[in-house]
Amino acid sequence: MIVAERKPFEEIYECVKRHRKVLLLGCGTCVTVCMAGGEKEVNVLANQLALAARDRGDDVEVMEHTITRQCDDEFFDEATMKKVAEVDAVVSMGCGVGVQFCAAKFGDTAIYPGLNTKFYGATLEQGVWAERCAGCGECVLGDFGGVCPVARCSKSLLNGPCGGSADGKCEVDPENVDCAWQLIYDRMERLGRLEELEENRPMKDWSTNRDGGPRTVTREDVKL
Ligand code: SF4
Ligand code: SF4
Image (tube, rainbow, N blue to C red; front, side):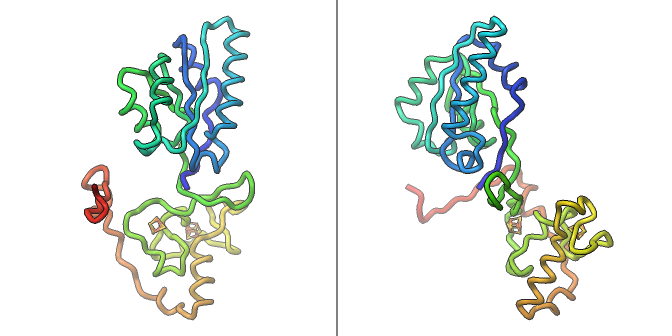
């Protein structure tokens, strides 16, 4: 899932206070799972904003609404669009994709991000999420025992480890970050495939990923 966290309150408030009527729009998918932008978080922020506006004497009315997904046209139903039409601005509590989807749909209504979008990650335990994929476009997990060197090695090394690996930890943050290359080594050893790591791997051809500008995936077989 996409992992995000809420922006600092004052940053959001600075945007909100420019308007008379604001809609906080939550997203019910990834950012609900990572407890950043779902219905509950929208409700908490709406109350905080309303209280702050009252205390500071700013004339701002805050409404709240959450849809299933902000990155998919089908969830912007009539009721949602009606709410948007009633306000001067929307604070999207979706990821950066959701914010941009809203901006394209909401015409002249101002749109602000309520979250900082971080990475594609997994839940390690409640309240802890970790980066696992960088969306590189050419997955090499099969060659590295299911551990991603692009997202999990601090230097994205395809031929590791570097000289900073010690006791299974990464020199970039030895307290908190496992060395991805230690994980790759251990996994490949368990799979009986260690000798594959002796081959020097060519640099990744990033031109197939980003040099053509923003990427799209088109599936002719499922297009309507
Ligand atoms: S190699 Fe890593 S960054 Fe690339 S798609 Fe696979 S998991 Fe994601
Ligand atoms: S210590 Fe390991 S994870 Fe950190 S940069 Fe070096 S190879 Fe990558």
